[in-house]
Image 1 (cartoon, helix red, strand yellow):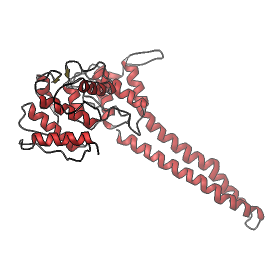
Image 2 (image 1 turned 60 degrees about the vertical axis):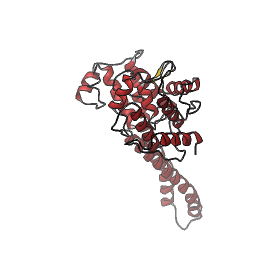
Image 3 (image 1 turned 90 degrees about the horizontal axis):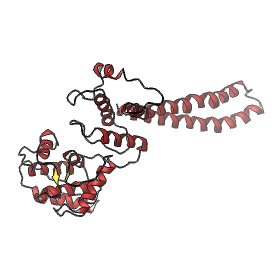
Image 4 (image 1 turned 135 degrees about the vertical axis):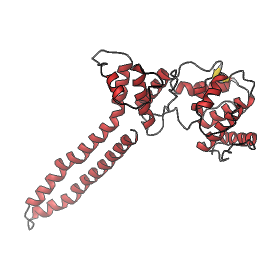
Length: 310
C-alpha cells in the first residue's frame, strides 16, 4: 500500500463525489485502472465535459489541446492537483498534492517523459498526450520480464512519432505486446508516406506494396534501418522459442536419451553389465528427461508470449 496513492484516491473522491458521472476510486493505496478512471472522469469534469467516461478519447484530448494542456502557470488548481495525483499513481513524486505547479511537479513529469524517450523537460505546459499517458497503467521503466533492447525500441518510437496526430505514447517497459507490434506497423506506414488517417496498424496489401521498394544494404542508415532492426529484435522471442525447443528437446533426445535406450536394449538382461547399465540408465536418462521437460515448457512459454504479442 502506497500512502501517496492513498492520498490521491482520497483527494479525488472528496473533491468529485457528487459530480454526476463520477465513479469514486478505491481507497486502498494501490494504483489500478479504477483509480485511473476516476482521475480521468475528474479531469473531464474540470475541462467542462458533461458526459463523463472512463475513456480518454478524442473529446478529452481535444478539450485539453484547446487550452494548451495543463499549464505551469495554470489558474485551475484542481487540474494541477489531478496531474500530481497521476504522478504519484505512476511512481513519480510531484512534491505533494498542492494545486501549485512546483519545480518538483515539473521534475516529476520531466522524468516520466525522459523515461518515455522524449527530449526536453516541461517548461510551459504538460502536453495533452503526456497527460493521457499519465492516466494509463503503462510503465515507462524497465519491468521484470522486459529487455533493454525492446525498451530502447519503445523509446525510439515515442521520440520519432509522437508528433504524428494519431500516435500516442507507448509503454517503455521492455515487454513485447500487441500494442507495441501495432505501433511498429504504424511507424512503417508513416515512413511509407501514409497520412494519419491511412496509417491504422493493419499491414495489408497497400502497406506491403509501399514497403517493397525500400530495400536495404550494408552501410545503410535512416529510419528504415531502425524499423528493420526493431522487427528483428521483436522476432528474437519467436526464434528463442524454436532454438530452446530444438536444442532442449530434439538434441538432448538424440545425443543422450536415445543412446541410453539403445545400449539398454542391446544388453543381456541376465548379465552384470546390464545391471550396471540399468543403474546408470535410471539416473542419467531421468536427468536428461527432466532437461527435455523443462526445455519444452520454456519453449512453450516463449511461443505463447510471441502469439500474445501478435
